[in-house]
Length: 528
Ligand SMILES: [Zn+2]
Ligand SMILES: [Zn+2]
Ligand SMILES: [Zn+2]
Ligand SMILES: [Zn+2]
Ligand SMILES: [Zn+2]
Ligand SMILES: [Zn+2]
Image (cartoon, rainbow, N blue to C red; front, side, top):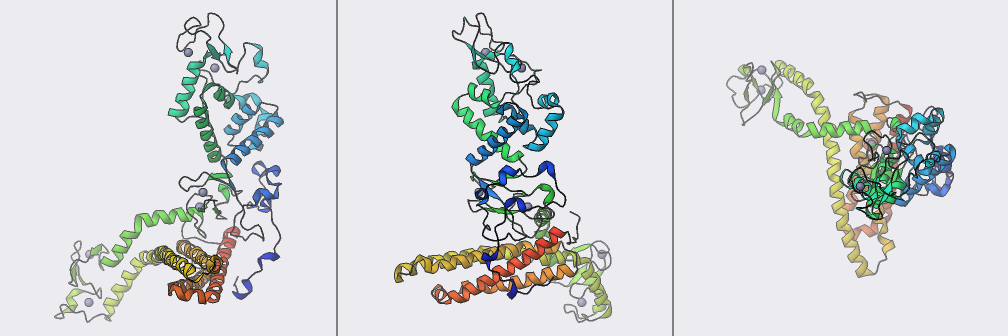
């Protein structure tokens, strides 16, 4: 699949709207886990998808940013549906959904098969919610009957006039002060909201539900409880994730599942501007899959400094292959292990160097050549890694430098605006061009990690050709920014042309890579 750069320029308006639910990453239909129709009916629901004015590209991911109130709406909507389908209270529905990690369909299916077992697992009473009220009043706060004594604090109605009590459907009642104390400790100190067990009897399997918590604890503690409930809801629900940016309160809803991560890289952008991977929470790492990105980061963390140092400062002994460090300028090396003496420059036997003590004149000697080619072989894997690592690190560094350049340009532009009365709109193209540059640098960075793990072959060659084209275009765009700021405005057309070209080269490379992921055609040098 070869790309012609010119023909790839597309008119963004010719594409039709595409809906969130059109995206199907699975080969086979997975009924149990598919998105519920109700959630995708409304087109406005996914207005956050940047690309809604045209067809989504294969490397792009549908997603929606959710605020805290929308996160709570999601929970309420699901609880309402389950509550009406199963004929149970909403509070019970929440506890059941939590047990099933908010997989509505599998909950309903399993509940219908064996409601008692499922209710038991969720810490709900096995009796129906309504029938248990026949005994003493449960699940409501009531005035303690005359002579009542709380089993925890051992106070009775004569110690505490107007004492109130609470019990779950099990009937294990405590005074409300003890209940409040117990729940507050659990929530505030232990951070527990999932399994708030009935405090009335250690053997009781029932869990305290939300209405009870709300009725028993202070408003401040209840607010804390709600926060934690939202937190675990987003963590538990497979199609939701928190934005990992510090202090960001948004969550992302995205239909890409863990099982899809080897065939798609779900890059999403939060309202706060953070562009990250929905699958693993790392910064965007297209075209690398999550597994490769994780592996690469670990490898760089473990190896890069050491590998660079080894490559620059050591050689392997031509005789026993142990690693030898060169210290000092002398080229006469003696292996500490096997005592073999050789020349650092030509890798040949030192004895053959005769009187030319400090100069190696034997570089083309047959025996020395053979020693060097063996050296190369043993170092090939290291060199290969460094080839990719150094390019990866170089683009990372350039990204930082480009940012500095841009800030300088931006400052200059503001000054020029003030002096010449140029409008803000007139200099906006610079921001646009810089965004294109930054996106390309970022993609290039990760393209080297991806290429490192690719087996040689036809599609790898195409990928590396695309990578080279993007790299050249990116460097040219970067160079334009290096010019004196005063010249930049006059080069608007040239800059925007280059910017469109870079953007297009990036799309071509990412589309090719994503197509390969979707079709499973990439072959890696490692098993993932
Ligand atoms: Zn008590
Ligand atoms: Zn109980
Ligand atoms: Zn965010
Ligand atoms: Zn990822
Ligand atoms: Zn040796
Ligand atoms: Zn030599």
